[in-house]
Amino acid sequence: MANDQSTETTQDLTDGFHLLIDALKLNGIENIYHVPGIPVTDLGRMMQAEGMRVVSFRHESNAGNAAAIAGYLTKKPGVCLTVSAPGFLNGLVSLSHATTNCWPMILISGSSEREIVDLQKGDYEEMDQLAVAKPLCKAAYRILHAEDIGVGVARAIRAAVSGRPGGVYLDVPASLLGQTMEAAKGAQSLIEVVDPAPAQLPGPKAIDRAIDVLKGAKKPLIILGKGAAYAQCDGLVKDFVEKSGAPYIAMSMAKGLLPDDHAQYAGAARSLVLKESDCVMLIGARLNWLLSHGKGKQWGEPFTKKFIHIDIDPKEMDSNQPIDAPLVGDIESTLGLLVDKMDGWSKPPADWTDAVQAKSASNVERMAPKLMNNNVPMDFHGALGRLKSIFKDNPDAILVNEGANTLDFARSVIDMSKPRKRLDVGTWGVMGIGMGTAVAAAVETGQPVVCVEGDSAFGFSGMEVETICRYNLPICVVIFNNSGIYRGTDTDPTGRDPGTTVFVPEAKYDMMMQAFGGEGVLARSPDDLERAVRDAIKSGKPTLVNAIIDPQAGTESGRIGNLNPQSVVSKK
Ligand code: ADP
Ligand code: TPW
Ligand code: MG
Image (tube, rainbow, N blue to C red):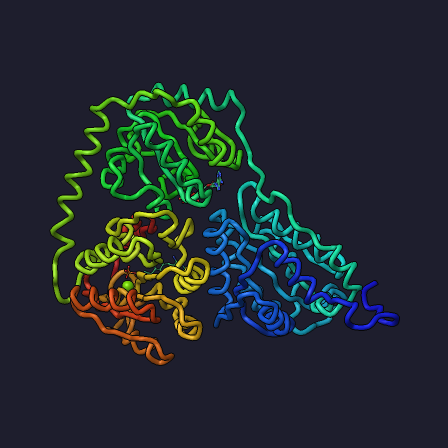
């Protein structure tokens, strides 16, 4: 029984701290992204002592973003551990972000005593955290008794990874951690989750229907989304795409699922394929704002297309366009069933595939000279041309990317040649994922990480350069410093203050890294930039390259300026 120590020696007892650690370890969770404080300081220490990798951050937002991307990279829930009310709230943004992106994550937060919180008597960091978390994640649980820790952790894991993955909140009141129970009974109460993300197969009729629709297409197009990258069935995706012979494009984080130099890759002919295709097959990609909801001139409307959609969540079907062939299932099982039906598949008509290839080739050729410029001050293309060649030479390096122009240009210029190597702002376009994502990418994969960061984007998580230095991680942060949000030229029309989108001109971000013992390098030319990044990858040392970009280079909101509302009152 909890708290009954009368007949036991402490060797025979366990407690909430250790049961929680044992439950996580039993389920293969070894990495924790954390900020310490009451009531979880000792929990973090004990996790470390028990051999878990505990990465302590400077802000929970960044620890949470680390956990979110760890979930995406590993298909296991990434775990973030925070203190109560404010720490919990800081972690909540990333839990919600993970849920929005369909990534498995568990936010574990310490909380105050129920008796005080529920009567609102005013406890230390009092908040009804469970109620706050519920609408913002996939599932939320509170554990009140030590003997329920096994169940609580098992439910959190299953909820996070099964079906459409998402974020789960686990509320851990301070008093739970100190509760004791017999060690043997405690061990028995733990649950090793069997088959946490069961396969889900579409029925044979759904498969036949999809095969018929795809066969009938004269101008098919495949769109790979980050759900397909998450599924980690890379060989099968390649097999399916190649058997189909259809041109494909990859959503941002699906780049590299097949190498971007693949003959069927139509990324450089995106406008053409969206407009002119007659059948679109979505694989782990939603028809949300990132695809203009599948509507409008961009999609060749009023001409209509057929849609085939593979997604694990049935509710995703018909969300924006009627889906002719819904395939509700996991991508691995579904593609397996489709590929089995594709022996002797006839390739799409050559006039379609040739036209797409010709358009891609001419667009790539048009871009090439821009990427070779050595201008000072640098523009986005001159700088990115060098990073493109660095990634070509280092295919295992992971690219973390955020900003507006910095994001949009880097996405189209830098080719990825392996899966899950491009990590970015996701479905919401969140600024601030950078350093947390970089830390988790390094911790989870052990590969070199290069972050390509707008100067504004970097500022949201910049303090974590200390974390990067403290854990001596192989991360090179490249700041595209155009001295502002979108550009560095705004002014206050009244002349009183700086313009709302500008920063201190040419801020010396490189000195931030130096302050914590890492390498800080100033780069004014593409040559400087290339040298610094190559050195950083070679040395594996924490490095920050402050790449000074022309403050005039950049447009409002990058490629999505059209989403800004317009005022009818003319600008002053
Ligand atoms: P992108 O932003 O790359 O277009 P989205 O995040 O919009 O991708 O879409 C990913 C989709 O993948 C989600 O709708 C999610 O339900 C789905 N998904 C995630 N994992 C799987 C899986 N293993 N099998 C099938 N669908 C999946
Ligand atoms: C959490 C709004 C979108 S892009 C951006 C902001 C503030 C910064 C763009 O400037 P940056 O890039 O990074 O210097 P560049 O190359 O164009 O100069 N708060 C959050 N998320 C978002 N998306 C914003 C604000 C925004
Ligand atoms: Mg900027």
